[in-house]
Length: 205
Image (cartoon, rainbow, N blue to C red; front, side, top):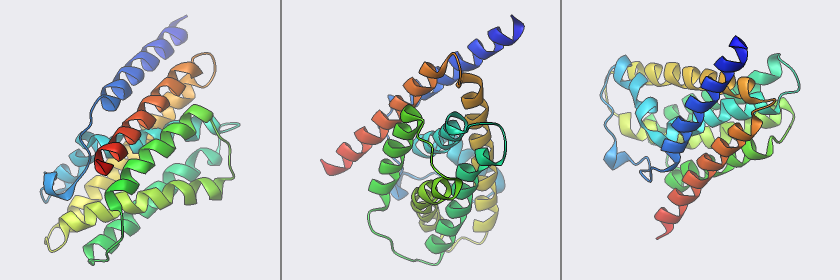
């Protein structure tokens, strides 16, 4: 009984958090960035940048829901996302221009949210490459913001640490919800997808 209660509390808190995210329509943009150069501010940025937070948690959530069993397959998506986030940040720091950065960030929410809803199972490499492609644009956005700053690498280190934490939170929540309460996870995924769709529509307006 104690374990079931813990799972219910975890599910409720997670669903409330994702629902709050989904009701926000503030996208990530360079002009609205409040990144400052330090490890702690870099760590805080994904936690308060709702588009990044939702994408990172959703990747962990999908990885847990889609896995057949506990094991290395849980980590393909999160590792792919974190690795390509770093690659994108390096490209952004070097001034490499990529098209449609903000629409791709919004699309990442739409797609990862739908992956959570569907619990789509794909090979690990495909999962890593798929979410990694979106993570590249998240990283580029960060790199643009930090280009020319002396302590950019400290800030990026903080962002990566927060990314790992958020992936872990998504994995833990997904694992807790994957059986009897999977509908809550799917509802959360639908909220993330709706958030991404709203951002895309806002950018097209």
